Amino acid sequence: MKFILPAILVITLFSFLPMIQSFILSFQTGKGIVTEFGGLANYQRLFKDPVFLQALKNTLLFLIIQVPLMTLLALIAAAILNDKKLKFRSFFRICIFLPCVTSLVSYSVLLKSLFSTSGLINDILLNLNLAPIDWLLDPFWAKVTIIIALTWRWTGYDMIFFLAAMQNIDNSIYEAARLDGAGPFKQFTSITVPMLKPIILLTSIMSTNGTLQLFDEVMNLTNGGPNNATITISKYIYDLSFKFTPNFGYAATVSYTIVVLVAILSFIQFKFTNKKD
Figure 1 (cartoon, one colour):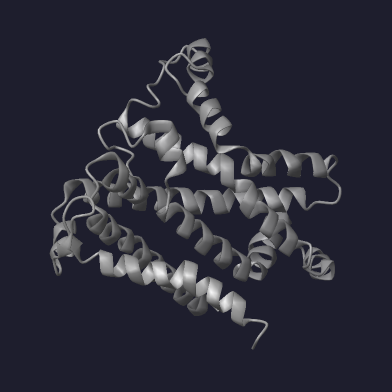
Figure 2 (spheres, helix red, strand yellow):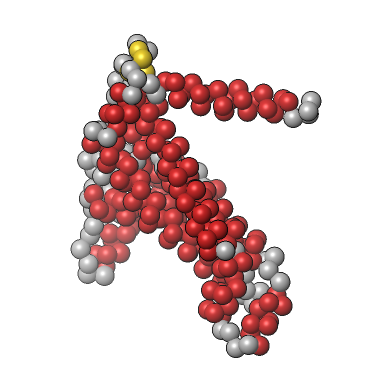
């Protein structure tokens, strides 16, 4: 007990106490440090707040599109790079994983440059006799840019998990499948994916958790614009706390929607996986 007591104290001090304090704060109303108990006023305000509803809609949209897309691409990349006959496997693995460890600032500057009105992407479109796109200024294309940025940066992270799990699958299972006439696609769908189900669940929960807290890409690429078209829940919490006149009570209330969403979606993912089993 004496060995784990320091860890328990640290976790309690820096995790559980702030969680309790923020929950109490979510019932406080008022601006800045002048607050008073407001009961459920902040929670009632949530469902009438158009900016919050837009942020919730955007966050769920990013979640629904980006997480399955990234998981699928990571699975395909892992399956290809797990082939022992493929040359320069280590080089390709590094190239795909490298964006995960890239500095956020340099990564954002690079993408803003690529997707700017006069950037490289539009230059390529013009050379192909296609119309340029306002990637960061059009509401639809700004969302597309965020999804591209997230997929580019985090696909390699999931790929490493899948690759490690694939290398633990007994090769004799694939040899038996080949003898039975199963091709590469059949082996992938009938052997690889089912045996990776626990890892797929793990990465899906981590990706869901990360996407629901999406802030960095939105802040650095679009700043939530244009006209709140890409604002997320975390970006709205930042605005409530530091950009507008501080309203920490309402910001704490909004933050607890992330907690609820993570809990609900994780529960659904666990239930769905158990039913499949």
